[in-house]
Length: 337
Ligand code: ZN
Image (cartoon, rainbow, N blue to C red; front, side):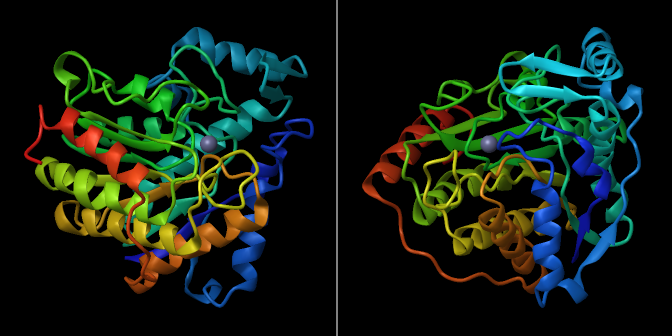
């Protein structure tokens, strides 16, 4: 599929008062792409506002009202690191709408990267946290289920565990949630044994890497664990919480992933989408706190999707092999591995 970005300059208007999730974070990625030779090949798609009904597919009404009320009151902190400015409610609707635009772009044969703010994957059904207000990717997955899809894959390679997304679908077999993340680390969840509950048991996959994991470790997890599970699951759509805070130059994460690693992961995601999902693939911006590194990582992802190739990377570290081995042991209860 041809690559696209979903972008609106209004994403700058979610003002966080000078912290690392800074207003121009997504804009910096766009201006980097504009200067690259990839730019003429990229379509730029403008998002629409999500509706309150869209938010309510993931979040409780009292929380949606609270975010709106705090914004209308001029702004305030939801917790120690999650700020709502006077414009944040509308911008958050535009962020959820940006994730939903991924689905609309499939009609035009586009695999897109939604460069949205505020991020979403920590937002719980009843409270925001970790810079996140509403869970953009979860809202998109809910739309796909409402449209009649029965198997949706959400891959989350942000350095932080996607606790909000996991919570949204913990008992839901129609969404397979697979997260690779640094552990121990914020938000503290994402251990091997968190595998889902009730009808959703076996449809949550967690790979808690120690600090320092690099390209070879991530790719080994994809090849040995995630791809075999995804092949068996046969998703009808592939969504990726594609945080860049695993980049070796990130200021919050402690991972060692390079542009080649991002490209290889994107290539694998595209392969999964091609295999069972008719190419339906979309990436959503989550974390990533070194603007230049994040921009290079997004470029690498889009280039891999556009060209269908990625630079080679090395093999896993001994630590990486141990972690993936433990995850395999747990997931063998549910999958042929
Ligand atoms: Zn993150």
